[in-house]
Length: 385
Ligand code: BHK
Ligand code: ZN
Image 1 (cartoon, rainbow, N blue to C red):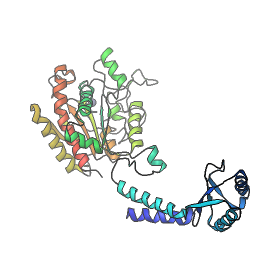
Image 2: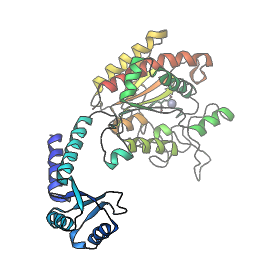
Image 3: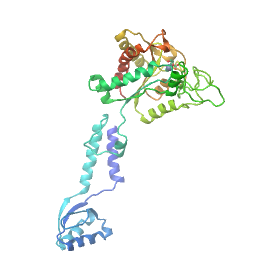
């Protein structure tokens, strides 16, 4: 259907919108003297002929290429012949070449359809040059809550892992040949700095609240998903303060704008700690997401893969049924944007150290989490819309 529509639109555009060159010829003229050159230049003054010099008359040594509209071809040839000027026909019917070009463009577009590589052996539209095709993409963010140090710590390990596995691990290689992975490793840098310098238990952003001695917004309540509803607070001093309005925090707005502008994310993964959970939407409603069975099965496969390395057990389920009600959180928002594989990890541990997870658990946590993330990405890649 799409092909048919595309073909029709080409035909219609050719017939009704674009200038045509039916019968136009391009003549290659050889002037043998300055006199002949002058005669040809005099043709340029005859504006009604609508002549188009592809190559201007310069010296007798160089050819002159002249496009002549179909209805003046005979007259121009007669003029050249009567003045003894030699010429040959370079292009017999210009429209034939234009038509051929349109057809090969069409064939190339149809072939390109559904692939994400740039075809260098074809001419392209302006759009294809400027933005290219946006490949389907995976989003991974971490560090949205300041005190959850394990989250950015393993994300940077994951980035290195993905980069080094490309070309070595067949699964990562084929994934990256089809999809892009975007990582925001430190979503809330101001909050993180504050946990390193002033208050290790800081969770929120650092934005000032006029008229309040409290500052900061819970960035994971600031998204446009039942904003300000249950499981969030309108009180500025609350740890779960949703902020003055949707996307008020630049940390959140940056994500929302980026993902919106890109327009082709199919998986969204956010890293928090702790409790060893793999969560999917929703947090603000008991209403199950449309593909809950797929989300649940994939979560169980991902946590099984995670456990296979060191035996770390993760539970999984929707946010609302597994932890609590939560409005304005990132994965409810991303899911409602059409990103079908939206997940939140609550990383190690189950509560022995909590936010104070010792440094020697960073790499093992990264290694096992990688197996789960890989499962989610592979599934997304095998189920592209
Ligand atoms: C994570 C992602 C989406 C919705 C809720 C959660 C749980 C998270 C939160 O925002 O309340 C709990 C938390 O920070 C500890 O990581
Ligand atoms: Zn968190």
